[in-house]
Amino acid sequence: MEGKIDWPRDAGGWERTGEAVSYEGRAIFDYMDGAGEVYLAYNFKNLKVQRFERAKHPAIIAEAYEMDTPEDAFGIFAWERQDPDAAIGQGSEIGGGLLRFWKGRYFFSIYGEGEGEEPAVLEIGRRVASSIAKEGGPPSLMRSLPEEHRVEGSVRFVRSHVLLNQRCFISDENVLGLGADTEAVFARYDFGKERTFVLLVGYPAGERARSAAAALGKAYGLDRAGVGEAGVGWTAAWVEGRHLVVALHAPKAEVARGLVEATMTRLKEEP
Amino acid sequence: MRITRRDFLKGTAGLAAVTALGMASKGRAADTAKVVLVRNRDVLGPGGEVRAEVLRSMLDEGVRALRGTDTPLAAWQSLFTKVDTVGIKSNSWHNLPTPPEMEEAIRQRLLDIGIGSENIAVADRGVLDHPLFQKATALVNTRPVRTHHWAGVGTLLKNYIQFVPQPSDYHPNGCADLGRIWTLPHVKGKTRLNVLVALTPQFYGRGANFFDRRYVWPYRGIIAGVDPVAVDAVGAEILRLKRVASFGEDRPLDVAPIHIAEADRKYHLGVSDLGRIEIVKVGWMEESLV
Image (cartoon, rainbow over the protein chains, first blue to last red):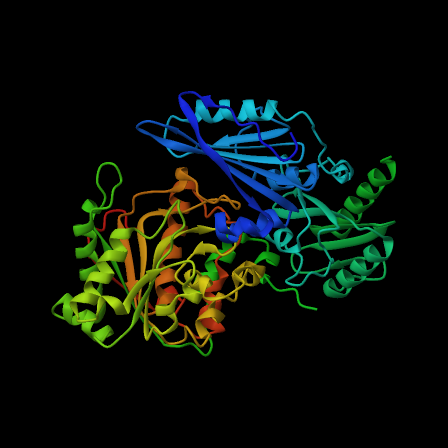
């Protein structure tokens, strides 16, 4: 179903009304103002908004976001994840009347404006998800993040340094050179009270990775071995091929080094 | 190479919120500020509808207390003259817009002091190209207070984002430089009154789809002031205290609302230090939080 969403005609008493309204590229700002920037940061292509109505009940608003890749669809889903799983699509959550899920290159947000609409919201979600035949995988780099001490549900994928800074602050400036052609995955690790992170960035070429490592090393005052203490905790940053691996806010230098080493080992084991 | 966001590097996002609001300022615009909090239990009906006449009286009481006059009309006359051309900057975000009843209450009071209807306009999107806003001699700024993905809190300072051609230019670093908008020639010095609507604020939310009805509560208040920074600081503090009351902690937002303190420290637009803001309370104050 590339480009066309197969919305159900009705669900739980709510009926599809009118044609879906479509927003291409930066026209997403016409629909949601500044929030559109988040979707654009994940290579957003098109949004379709479909309304469902039922007499004497608030409407249900269903949004289908077509992204450039399944990784991007996963990225926008995981970025905001906070609620229990709804077992729809390739990853989902429901809370406060809002169902969010992703499948293939699509991310869906289905919102019931009133109380008691959750069954209909879920039915719309299940039916539209089943109409999408082609699945896709989350970013393969995620498999290289160490599992020991990792906080469950904390893995995120970004291409934008602005978004990265919101969850894992690096610098006001884009010292890592993130952009539409890079992939960055990161997760939080529990070593007591510290908020330790492992960040793994994939660049198109090794030169970009080495340049980013140099910039980070300068900003954080890392030594020749790529280790240093900056702000809260220790930082370590090494390059492996076209990848940069960074451990941030570790309680000890050896913890930072250990996390980077573990990530690089897993990275080398990936096919 | 800069690495700032020192609050984050200190390791506690909760501290960031406190720092954002409580920062002592250098080169500040004023030593103190006055903000009026007005609440009325009856402003919302049983279905959540806004009772226009109650809201109008809240606005009157708020402006009167702000200006220290005997009557609301005298208070409005101390802020505007009948030769003013006034743009009322509203907020049309569909999930939680400025109530039309608030827009109309402001418009009516401007009419009452003799400003012609042809010299008053209400708008949100498109104000940059709006003929009346382009020639406005005065602005009234009004919007609901809520959490916001890019700015931490959707504030009066944030409400002027439509006065720039490329709003996303202000998104980096938690929208820290929103205060700069207020220094632009078509905005600078024109805002006479700020009214932050806190009838049903949203105190928490994550991500771009930031409306979440679980985190909206009927506070039934408005916060008025001449100083937008002070009004925003109080509004953000109410949201923070509600998070503490609801979660048992100040659960971190996507970003801390650092733009409020920056508007004070860097752009000298007003007072962000809660210790230097006088909050005048009018009306029903049960669970007012501040």
